[in-house]
Image (cartoon, rainbow, N blue to C red; front, side, top):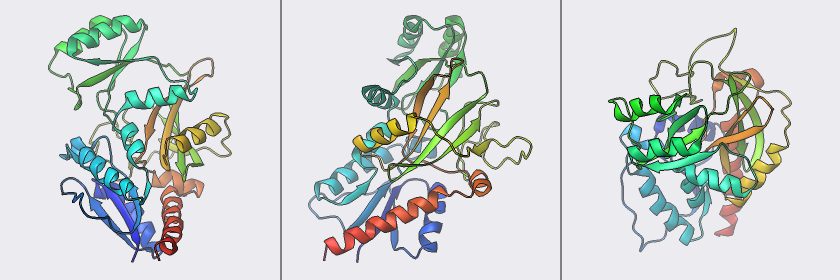
Length: 316
């Protein structure tokens, strides 16, 4: 019997989805790929496969989960299985450099960015960037890994040469121009089935680490998840959000075979939109959703159920 297979490495982030699948009485199985094996000589089981593999898996002790997932996805795709967020989505999830080149090829503006390997190259890249203020971030990131704001190359040198420098897991640090917004917030657009669901306004006044999951593992002073700030909630679903960029995003997702994603952008003082992150294992904030009456995981569960109905008769 066909079922839904969830590929992931973080049960706390996946529980919200399995709760919705149970609510809809859908058959599923979790593949927790922090370790395992792939018998390439055998055929995969029948069903619908959805990958939630995360770029930040190494922060939970699952260093090679994305590499194992890549092998599994290649195996599934070779045998023609229905895969949501397959190999192409994973390739973008684990590399912001790949994200930016892909976005640029679709005419979507991103902040000027230079990728550097080696501490001396980070300093050289900052000089070449020529921005008054700039940030560093990890190429394989998630959870705001390696994000630091600098207003001078001297300050960057002190950080890079000091004990607090965070070595990126893939060896690549990105140096990126700092887009200063007139208001301290960014916008995150959620898509399910490649279609826009809603946009969230995210307050950035207390830091860069902006994971929306309820079971967030950041452990940082500025982690917004679970905070109760009724006067000024960290996450707010924007009512009647309409922007031309949404159509561009939907085209981008379709052409890159990405079914589920959260895409983040920021506006500069002139109102220009700069897209800077694509999350293909997107999470949702329950307080913001409850207030708006919109539920991303429910939409995702319905999508998986719909795909399962399509697959089942095709295999009879």
